[in-house]
Image 1 (cartoon, rainbow, N blue to C red):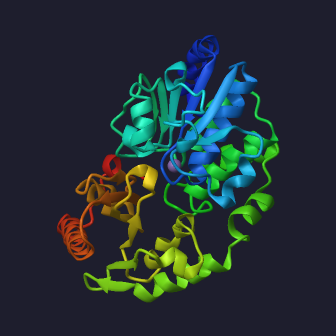
Image 2: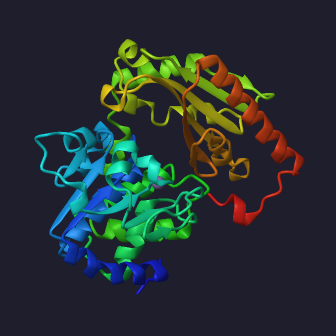
Length: 360
Ligand SMILES: [Mn+2]
């Protein structure tokens, strides 16, 4: 039998009886959940339920994006205000063993969930910048997706992967590898994806749900974003801006920003790209305007996670994000300086790659 994650599988098998005995598990994802986050949450929730855990609930600070809703039809996924601070809710965080998935650190789930679960039971993740924060950490930065790690463990242990579970985990791998294009794509990704297809994942259906159901508003948002693109650092850095009010103006939503930054990165000669967003926070989160940036690099030697870390953010070598409380002009100037510094540093090192340091 294939063994994808021998160490993790053994550890996971040892924890299963504990989770079963506890009876209640909360699977916590990150803010603005993506395909890997929802895929990992749904996949893990279904496998734990099938393995005899009485109650499994997935929790997110933000809503499940429309294009991922095909994964959650049969799984309980709650949005933070539905259960935290809601007097009608009978949800008590203390009753649950929390498993964080796809979160580079405990804060990535949002302050409300972080406060509700100060001591996570376990976490499963693949972010390079993850310092480890749970009692039981399943952390592997050499994996392309959290869903890849979970699928590998389930396959190793022969745990039941039904059609819905396979769909969810396959979606996580497809989205985090950029449809099997990013440098993180390995033979293991394909081997695991193949096993998931054998268990009912449908690549054509997933491709349709993810990429063939755009709204006109999303394309209008893309149009607005493309108009703002600017090349800096001799054409090696490209960034674009979404001002507050843009979603109303274009008939789009926050979740439509996903993937826009890839257009900036796709320009020949660009090494680092950024999408900067002036975001009005939801009222239940205290309101106010924040600057958010998504950073992408073509090559992991550019370590955009390190640029993000300067602003308190984090992520992967090729994909990272951050939030800052600053005004637009000051923030853009600071970001530009940080990117220029990183480009110069890589150039000074002759673009030398250190395999330990640069793996996505
Ligand atoms: Mn991920």
